[in-house]
Image 1: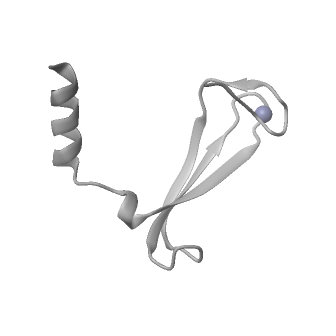
Image 2: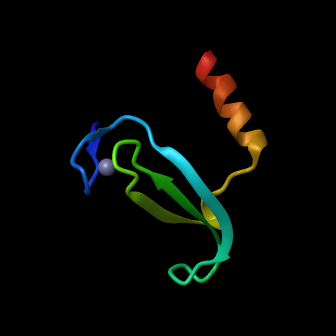
Image 3: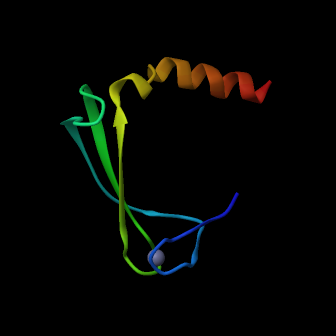
Length: 70
Ligand SMILES: [Zn+2]
C-alpha cells in the first residue's frame, strides 16, 4: 500500500519523527500519546492520537516476534 502526502502529493515511504507526548485525549477521554510526524519532502506535519488501550505489554510484542520466526 502506498500513501501520498496530502500537501506535496509525493509518495511517502518513510516519515520523519517529530514529537510524541502523553496527553489526555479529548477524542477518547483517556490518556493517549500525541504523535507528530513530518513529510520528508515538504515538511508537512501530521499528527494522531494513540489511546492508552492501543498499547500492549512489551512482553507480548517479543512473543509475537518470536512466533513470527517459527
Ligand atoms: Zn509532503
